[in-house]
Amino acid sequence: QVQLVQSGAEVKKPGASVKVSCKASGYDFTNYGFSWVRQAPGQGLEWMGWVSADNADTNYAESLQGRVTMTTDTSTSTAYMELRSLRSDDTAVYYCARDNGVGGPLYPDYWGQGTLVTVSS
Amino acid sequence: QSVLTQPPSVSGAPGQRVTISCTGGSSNIGAGYDVHWYQQLPGTAPKLLIYRNNYRPSGVPDRFSGSKSGISASLAITGLQAEDEADYYCLSYDGSLSGSVFGGGTKLTVL
Image (cartoon, rainbow over all chains, first blue to last red; front, side, top):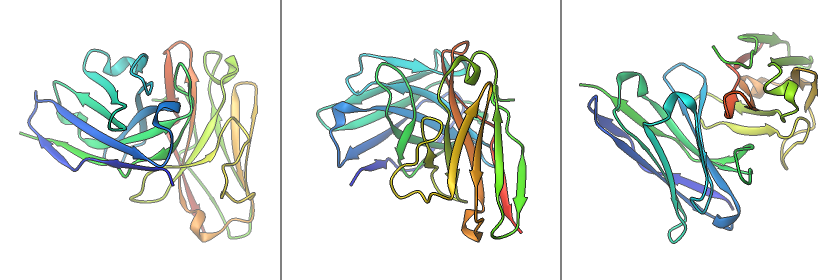
């Protein structure tokens, strides 16, 4: 069965960076990309971006351009999301999700369990 | 403020039918991009409910259905059950933003 297992919770200071991992299993990793979605406390879902399985293509939300990098490692079937210059309003649960898009985001179907990132001085 | 507008809340009694709307514009739903729907129970990750406007993934009851017309899409839930109480989100692609976008979410309360 498809499983996405994310890394554990993080506490970071403003200005720092965070890198969240997402290990996939149960399917052919090279056939799907990944979308990353975050949810601030008590708020709705925010689409952050998409990366192809082979790292050849990325598509980032305009609001995060220049601060976010999404990558994959096909040798370990793991996707990564790095967010830099953290601010307090980056405090959120970050989800990775397998995406059915080819060449760009389409729709996520399977989701990780979420990783809480807290930004606080 | 999302480019996809959903009502903040809807409610219905057990057994009733409710619909949740998702209204976009000419750069997203109106441009022909597909709409997908997610259900999020409290404290859990979102779950895919409807993809490509009106397709149900395996395991999703046929009480859930989706439709799309013009610049809007709708999620309908028939035979409302207590376990349907959750937040619901639409998702589509926006050509002007060059990325995907979620609606603001709708909280469904089963009375």
